[in-house]
Length: 94
Image 1 (tube, rainbow, N blue to C red):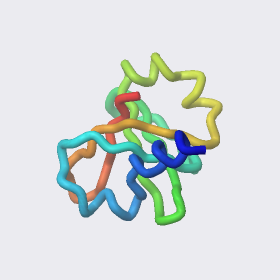
Image 2: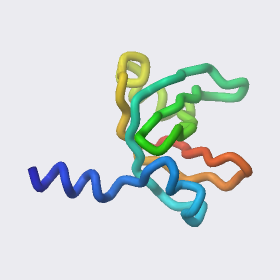
Image 3: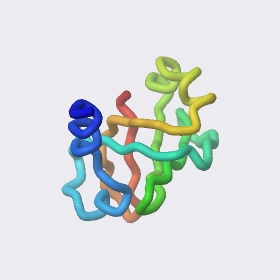
């Protein structure tokens, strides 16, 4: 039980992402609501938690490593790079 609490406390909620300093690693988890191909390399998916949606950009090299999980998962736990833009995006690392 303690291990689950430690993992959860290290994660950020969707609503917290806009308040964090960009260009840092974050961990998010959520129910997968949308997966779509991007015009550039990779795919995009939305992970919804109790506070909102997080847009997760999955570049080709990460997509190839985790392809089966990405295409079949209903819930994702993602370590990602918090990107700076008008819309909060996280770029999946693993």
